[in-house]
Image 1: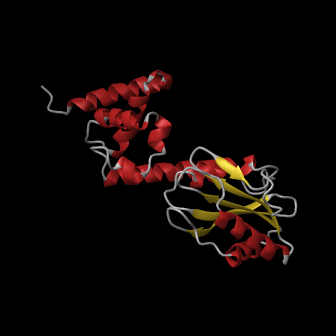
Image 2: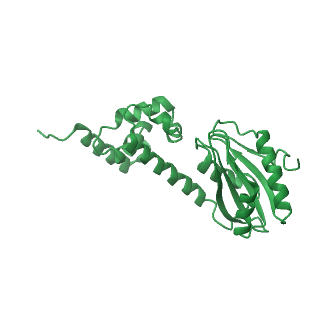
Image 3: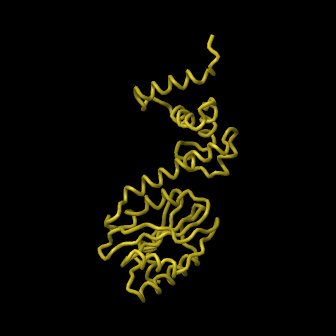
Length: 227
């Protein structure tokens, strides 16, 4: 009799089924396989089912906050690192769908990239999408990292990024970890200050987009840039 753990044969069969037709696997089986690459010496089926029971879907599992994941028995520091690598990979993959020199015509052109990068963050951060005089993307850069409910960004930091990249326009982007993308009074005031500083140097502020995990808000679409 073999002394190999029983789950190794099960995992091998799952891989064979995946290679034959990936669409035949249940969600928990696909998650089980993924977890197996981070936990090769552990039966990951119970953990996969526990994660789906807790978060409801693969998207819910993927987007879960670190402290929520740590509440699940069997989800330790090593797996948390694996999760962060996976999320970073996805954020960069979404960023690559918006390559440099892409023309920005509407908020939707940058929302997906912004949500992939910021939507699931547990802390606020402030970014700027910098564009040329034809609204073609030059760069998407972080300007400030904050706390769970605010990010201390200063106009000089945003303007400095624009000057560094020789941008003639910019789109402000930040996230609301609480899930509601509606702008606060502070968000409006910061936008006014940045617009005033930018206008003095001939730099256009095209929009301020606030993203949450499942939603977003555009100052331009809601008429707030004219305040």
